[in-house]
Amino acid sequence: MRLAASALLLAALSTPGALLAQVAGAPATATGVPAIAPGMMIYDSAGGDVGTVDTVAGDVIVVSTGTHKVSLPAKAFGSGPKGAMIAMTRAQLDAAAVQAATDAAAALKLKLIAGAPVHGVGGSAVVGNVKTVEDQFVVVMTPTGSARLPIAAFGIGAGGEIIIGMTAAQFAAAVAAAK
Image (cartoon, one colour):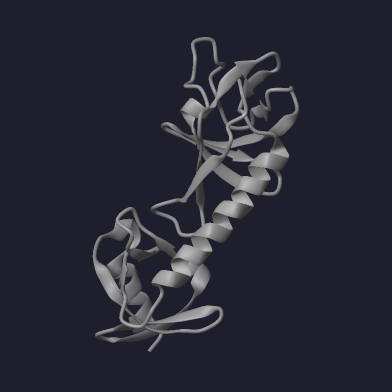
Protein backbone atom coordinates (compact mmCIF):
# COMPACT_ATOMS: atom_id res chain seq x y z
CA MET A 1 0.00 0.00 0.00
CA ARG A 2 1.50 3.35 -0.89
CA LEU A 3 0.89 6.36 1.30
CA ALA A 4 -1.57 8.76 -0.28
CA ALA A 5 -0.21 12.24 -0.90
CA SER A 6 -3.04 13.71 1.13
CA ALA A 7 -6.21 12.78 2.93
CA LEU A 8 -9.58 14.25 2.08
CA LEU A 9 -11.52 14.82 5.26
CA LEU A 10 -15.11 15.99 5.45
CA ALA A 11 -17.30 16.90 8.38
CA ALA A 12 -19.80 14.18 9.06
CA LEU A 13 -23.14 15.14 7.63
CA SER A 14 -25.50 14.15 10.35
CA THR A 15 -23.52 14.80 13.51
CA PRO A 16 -21.82 18.17 13.92
CA GLY A 17 -18.26 17.85 15.11
CA ALA A 18 -17.73 14.35 13.92
CA LEU A 19 -15.23 13.62 11.14
CA LEU A 20 -15.53 11.53 8.03
CA ALA A 21 -12.14 10.82 6.55
CA GLN A 22 -11.44 9.30 3.18
CA VAL A 23 -7.88 8.35 2.36
CA ALA A 24 -7.26 9.51 -1.19
CA GLY A 25 -5.52 6.91 -3.30
CA ALA A 26 -6.05 4.07 -0.84
CA PRO A 27 -6.78 0.76 -2.50
CA ALA A 28 -10.22 -0.75 -2.37
CA THR A 29 -10.73 -3.51 0.16
CA ALA A 30 -9.25 -6.59 -1.43
CA THR A 31 -10.06 -10.25 -1.11
CA GLY A 32 -8.31 -11.61 1.95
CA VAL A 33 -8.81 -8.51 4.10
CA PRO A 34 -9.92 -9.74 7.50
CA ALA A 35 -13.47 -8.92 8.55
CA ILE A 36 -13.24 -5.67 10.48
CA ALA A 37 -14.98 -5.62 13.84
CA PRO A 38 -15.06 -3.37 16.92
CA GLY A 39 -12.02 -3.80 19.14
CA MET A 40 -9.72 -4.89 16.30
CA MET A 41 -6.29 -3.29 16.04
CA ILE A 42 -5.57 -1.42 12.80
CA TYR A 43 -2.00 -1.12 11.53
CA ASP A 44 -0.09 1.09 9.10
CA SER A 45 1.82 -0.30 6.12
CA ALA A 46 4.98 -0.70 8.25
CA GLY A 47 3.09 -2.71 10.88
CA GLY A 48 2.80 0.13 13.42
CA ASP A 49 -0.32 0.46 15.55
CA VAL A 50 -2.74 3.10 14.21
CA GLY A 51 -5.66 2.48 16.56
CA THR A 52 -8.59 0.24 17.29
CA VAL A 53 -11.92 -0.12 15.56
CA ASP A 54 -14.55 1.69 17.60
CA THR A 55 -17.62 0.97 15.46
CA VAL A 56 -18.58 -0.41 12.06
CA ALA A 57 -21.66 0.95 10.30
CA GLY A 58 -22.01 -0.32 6.76
CA ASP A 59 -19.08 0.95 4.72
CA VAL A 60 -17.92 3.37 7.44
CA ILE A 61 -15.42 2.20 10.03
CA VAL A 62 -14.61 4.43 13.02
CA VAL A 63 -11.00 4.08 14.16
CA SER A 64 -9.93 5.43 17.55
CA THR A 65 -6.28 6.47 17.69
CA GLY A 66 -6.53 7.20 21.39
CA THR A 67 -6.59 10.91 20.55
CA HIS A 68 -9.21 11.10 17.80
CA LYS A 69 -12.06 9.01 16.44
CA VAL A 70 -11.98 9.11 12.66
CA SER A 71 -14.50 7.59 10.27
CA LEU A 72 -12.90 5.87 7.31
CA PRO A 73 -14.53 4.22 4.30
CA ALA A 74 -14.12 0.44 4.19
CA LYS A 75 -12.23 0.79 0.91
CA ALA A 76 -9.39 2.53 2.82
CA PHE A 77 -8.46 -0.79 4.47
CA GLY A 78 -6.14 -3.44 3.13
CA SER A 79 -4.49 -6.53 4.53
CA GLY A 80 -1.00 -6.61 6.00
CA PRO A 81 1.16 -9.12 7.86
CA LYS A 82 -0.43 -8.22 11.22
CA GLY A 83 -4.01 -7.80 9.97
CA ALA A 84 -6.16 -4.94 8.72
CA MET A 85 -4.19 -1.84 7.75
CA ILE A 86 -4.53 1.64 6.28
CA ALA A 87 -2.07 3.79 4.33
CA MET A 88 -1.51 6.28 7.17
CA THR A 89 0.40 6.13 10.42
CA ARG A 90 -1.26 7.04 13.72
CA ALA A 91 0.51 10.43 13.64
CA GLN A 92 -0.63 11.09 10.07
CA LEU A 93 -4.22 10.13 10.88
CA ASP A 94 -4.21 12.34 13.99
CA ALA A 95 -2.72 15.24 12.01
CA ALA A 96 -5.33 14.78 9.26
CA ALA A 97 -8.11 14.75 11.89
CA VAL A 98 -6.82 18.01 13.42
CA GLN A 99 -6.57 19.62 9.98
CA ALA A 100 -10.07 18.46 9.04
CA ALA A 101 -11.51 19.86 12.27
CA THR A 102 -9.71 23.17 11.69
CA ASP A 103 -10.94 23.37 8.10
CA ALA A 104 -14.51 22.44 9.08
CA ALA A 105 -14.57 25.07 11.87
CA ALA A 106 -13.31 27.75 9.49
CA ALA A 107 -15.90 26.83 6.83
CA LEU A 108 -18.66 26.85 9.45
CA LYS A 109 -17.67 30.28 10.80
CA LEU A 110 -17.95 31.69 7.26
CA LYS A 111 -21.54 30.42 7.04
CA LEU A 112 -22.64 31.53 10.53
CA ILE A 113 -23.91 34.99 9.69
CA ALA A 114 -27.00 36.88 10.84
CA GLY A 115 -30.09 35.70 8.99
CA ALA A 116 -28.65 32.38 7.81
CA PRO A 117 -31.17 29.52 8.09
CA VAL A 118 -30.35 26.68 10.49
CA HIS A 119 -31.61 23.20 9.56
CA GLY A 120 -32.39 20.22 11.76
CA VAL A 121 -30.45 16.97 11.67
CA GLY A 122 -30.04 15.66 8.16
CA GLY A 123 -30.56 19.15 6.72
CA SER A 124 -34.33 18.75 6.59
CA ALA A 125 -36.56 21.41 8.12
CA VAL A 126 -35.38 24.91 9.02
CA VAL A 127 -35.42 25.26 12.82
CA GLY A 128 -34.65 28.98 12.87
CA ASN A 129 -32.26 31.65 11.67
CA VAL A 130 -28.96 32.87 13.06
CA LYS A 131 -29.58 36.05 15.04
CA THR A 132 -26.09 36.75 16.38
CA VAL A 133 -22.71 35.04 16.53
CA GLU A 134 -20.46 35.40 19.58
CA ASP A 135 -16.98 33.96 20.22
CA GLN A 136 -18.27 30.60 21.47
CA PHE A 137 -22.04 30.81 20.96
CA VAL A 138 -24.68 31.37 18.29
CA VAL A 139 -28.13 32.75 19.02
CA VAL A 140 -30.80 31.11 16.84
CA MET A 141 -34.12 32.92 16.49
CA THR A 142 -37.34 30.96 15.97
CA PRO A 143 -40.96 32.12 15.72
CA THR A 144 -41.46 31.07 19.37
CA GLY A 145 -38.22 32.38 20.89
CA SER A 146 -34.48 32.18 20.69
CA ALA A 147 -31.80 29.78 21.87
CA ARG A 148 -28.12 30.42 22.63
CA LEU A 149 -26.11 27.36 21.58
CA PRO A 150 -22.38 26.57 21.54
CA ILE A 151 -20.77 26.79 18.12
CA ALA A 152 -19.80 23.13 18.50
CA ALA A 153 -23.52 22.24 18.19
CA PHE A 154 -23.47 23.32 14.52
CA GLY A 155 -22.13 21.69 11.38
CA ILE A 156 -22.41 21.89 7.62
CA GLY A 157 -24.81 19.55 5.82
CA ALA A 158 -24.41 17.77 2.49
CA GLY A 159 -25.97 20.68 0.61
CA GLY A 160 -23.79 23.26 2.36
CA GLU A 161 -26.55 24.25 4.79
CA ILE A 162 -25.98 24.95 8.49
CA ILE A 163 -27.28 22.05 10.59
CA ILE A 164 -27.63 21.20 14.27
CA GLY A 165 -27.74 17.73 15.79
CA MET A 166 -31.45 17.63 16.57
CA THR A 167 -34.66 17.54 14.60
CA ALA A 168 -36.86 20.60 14.15
CA ALA A 169 -39.36 19.11 16.64
CA GLN A 170 -36.64 18.49 19.24
CA PHE A 171 -35.30 22.00 18.78
CA ALA A 172 -38.77 23.56 19.11
CA ALA A 173 -39.38 21.55 22.30
CA ALA A 174 -36.05 22.68 23.75
CA VAL A 175 -36.81 26.34 22.97
CA ALA A 176 -40.29 26.01 24.53
CA ALA A 177 -38.88 24.32 27.64
CA ALA A 178 -36.33 27.10 28.09
CA LYS A 179 -39.01 29.80 28.36
